[in-house]
Structure formats: C-alpha cells, structure tokens
Length: 349
Ligand SMILES: [Zn+2]
Image (cartoon, rainbow, N blue to C red):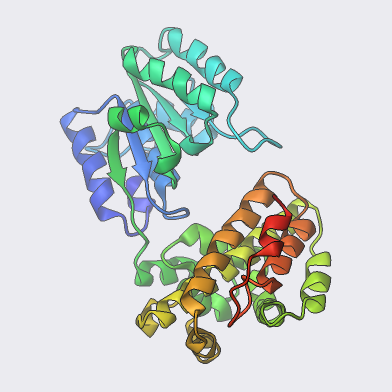
C-alpha cells in the first residue's frame, strides 16, 4: 500500500509525507473523517513507510525485506487491533494482548506501528487502558487510531493524538475508481458515485450488496409505510435474510434510506439539487419535501434509521430491525401532517 494509491486525499497525505520526510513523526495520530474515504489505506501506507528499510523519500519502497513482510501481512512490528469476528466492540483483553507485545523489544530494532481500526469500537475500559499507554510512551511505537466517529472517544485520547482529517473523495476520481472495478456494473457508476457522496467504501458496499436494484421497491414500501400502509413494508423486510449477506444488504439499504431522509431535509430547507444523493429521484422527493413538517419528519426518520443500523450491528435480526423501523415510520410521529404523542416510538422503550 502506497500513498499514491489513495484517491483524492492530498491534504492529509501531505501531512504524513512531510512527517515521514522530516523524520518528525508524532507518537499518536487520529485519522478521522467519513467512512470509506481511505483512512485505513492511508494508515497502512503510513505504517509501511515508517517500517520500510529503505524509504524512497516518503513512500515505502515496496521491495525491501520489511515491505515484503508488510505486503504479506506478517510484519512483526505492525500490530493491528480490530473488532474480533462476531463481536461489535474491541474488548479489553485484545488491547492487553497487543500492549504485551509492544512491551517486547522491537524485532527489527526500528519503529513499531499499532493501528486501531475503528478506534471508536474500543470498549470504555479499553479506552482507559489505552490512555495509560499513550501517557507512558514506549520508545518507538507510533499509534494510528482510525475513526469516523471521534465523538465516541474519550476527550483525553483525542487531545493526545495529532489529528489528521480526511474528507469525501472528489467526484471525478471516485467515478474513475468505480469505472475501473470489475465487480461494479458500468451502468451503475454514475448513480453509485452520486449516492456514495465521496465514499468509495459506501459505493462499493452498495454495489456489491446489490442494494441499487432494491432501491425503487424500498422507497415504494417506505412511502406506503409513511402514509400508514405498513403491510408491504413488513413483507419486504421479512424477505431480508439473517445471513452475513442479509446483514450487509440491510445496512446498505438503510444507507439509501438515510440519504433519502437527508435529501428531503435538503429540499425542505431550500437546499440545492446538486447537494442531493438520489439526484435521479428529485421529483418524488420534492413532493415529499413540500408536505408541511417534512424537514422535522425527515430528521426524526434519519435518527431512527441510524438506530436500526446500530441494532443490526449489535446482532438484531435484520428483518426485525427493518420491521421495527417501518412500524415507527408508519406511526403518528413518522406520518405526514400528524404530530401526536408517539405511542409507537415509545413502544420499544
Ligand atoms: Zn521498503
């Protein structure tokens, strides 16, 4: 992995290149920005450059013994802390295991790098243990924390890391990258690029989960639910399986609904059509945005959709999470022109 393989992140990459070039590398970095824009790839490229035996200026050379091991995923001085299979957080014992490895002397006598991705998945205990490690810097370890949700980290961790901000990938390189993928239908490139809003990860997830063909049916049943006709939405949700693929599909379609809620908020507040994700559906969304109270309703839907995504990540069956969402959207708070007490929203509490 090289910096030059990363799309449209000139500013953050320049910070990292400059640090590598000058040999002035901070003890801990926080790579923050939206999901799917290249933060983890940048962390890998930075780690490779730091560990390389013969860095060509600021990039890893790609051919030394260190780079070969890095490429094979067997570099002894690269430590990666991720969410274990089947869990939703990084438990403290995982953190302690890495900490113990870091206490040992560096294998190559050079730098060690620890990547935590996503750092917001560190449990509360693990964050506090991590904070201690940050306070007592062991010589030669560079920590790279990757997150799309820095607000989920304790403030003292944030203040001890050098922040490197990543933004959405600009439209042109995003389209080029999608067009170059064999696993993306060329006919979907424009639509995916529009919907993904600068996130290659999101575009690929939507493309691979086959979420786009779902979209029209999804919007139809969601629209019906919002006018109080819940049957089709419940039946549609029933069809989403509880497998790993089903989960990915549910998360992807919920992303589509999130973006639709966002679009309606944009339109209802007089925003520009060019800011929309579902640009090809502008007419239908304009109709929705014209109903009194549309912006508030869309904002509530947005929050509720986020909760459904969270539920699925916490292992709630996708069909159940989707049905609960549709039921709430069909309830008094979800429906246009009503503003009653919210019996449905309370029901789950
Ligand atoms: Zn190298």
